Each structure stands twice: as structure tokens, then as C-alpha cells.
Image (cartoon, rainbow, N blue to C red; front, side, top):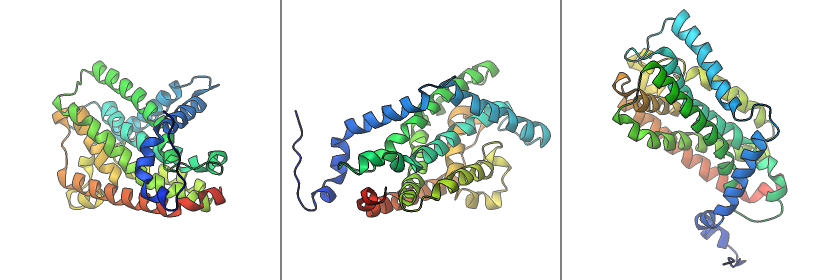
Length: 274
């Protein structure tokens, strides 16, 4: 049944969140478009999403595990420790990078028709979920190879997946909105992602961080996400640092609120700026 479009002053503001649901088909179309564009006419297709973390895992294992000789969690093979940390990191960084330029690339749509603009960066992040699921399968195969199977903690993995998406969506909405007005933001994103990779516990265990600063270290929301993923996937071999997890959750909720608030406040001007 076709939906009746009513033009009324202030109606879009009052019904914004219900409009997000009503435009769910547009969300699906944009998400499928981004996935098709990502892998269309590529030589190795989705395999690139697997090769990149595998190569990064090898480098981190050699540098941190062999050369620096940093300890693993509970005797877990170091490649498994690294890959379990890279899963949420690549999900976080991919959502951030895919969403940051999404409004600019969809300018031809934004300037012509009305729909809740938040659909655009949200749908761009679906590509990151596809890569994440492919990498999750690879991790399970590696864990089976090493004989390191997850225990009952695995049931909490969907929660930490949502945690990772929320942690990335807040900054992504903020940066996406800023990128519409200040186009040089696209040069900052790769630097932030590269810097974040080395200040987050991706290539090493969070246990090596001194206890005295570990809570402060958890102000980086990705720290809580990575610790949670390792706890889910590595079982009792990896401990969950609850004070740090609480701090990371709090920072994530704050950044999500700031991102949504700024995005909504600047959304009206997008059509004029893109």
C-alpha cells in the first residue's frame, strides 16, 4: 500500500524517528548499492576483506609476539589473540571510513528528495558488517586449527557487536556532518584510523597496560570493545576488565549522543552544501 506523503511545517522534525522506519526500504537499497559498488569489477572481491586482516595479523604477531615478546592471554596462541582484537577494530574503522564520505557521494539524491539523512551513513556501514562476518568465519577456522574453541561466553558476542557499531556510529555521524561543510575532513580520517590502530590493544593484550592507568586507557571506547570480543571468543583465557568496560560504554553513549545531536542540528543544510 503506497504511503501518503503529507507536507506540513515541522512534521519532519516531529516524525523523524518514525520516518527512519518508514524509509527502511531505502536503507536496504542504499546498503545493497554500497555492497555492489564495493565488490563489483574487482579481481579478488570479498577476499580482499580477508587478506588485509590476515597480513596485519602476521605483522603484529611478528612485531609484538616474536620481537617484543609481549605475553598472550592465558597461553592463547598469539595469532588468535591478534585476530580476535582485529575483528572489532576493522569493524569500527570500516564503519568510520565508509560513513565519513557517504553524504558527499550521495549528493545527487540528497539534493533532490526528502528522507531522513541519517539513513545514508548508517547504510554505508553495512559494507563493514559484510567484511566482519567474512573475517569472523576465518577466525573460527583459525581457532579450530589451533584447537582453541570458544566457551559459553560466545553468547555475548552479539552484544559486543552492537557495542562496536555504537562506538563507531557516534564519531561517524559527527565526522560525516562535519565533512559536508569542511571537505578537508576526509584527509583527517585516515590519520585518525591509523593512529587509533596503534593506541588500541589490537596487537597486544590489554593486560600489559599498567593497572594504574588502565581505566584512563579505557576512555578510548575501542578498548572496551576489543576486551569484550576477546572475552567472548577466548573464554576464560581472557579476563574482562569491568571498570574499563564501564568507562568505554559511558564514552560510547556520550559520543553517540553528541554525534546524533550534531547530525540532526546540521541536517537541514546538507542539501545546500553538498
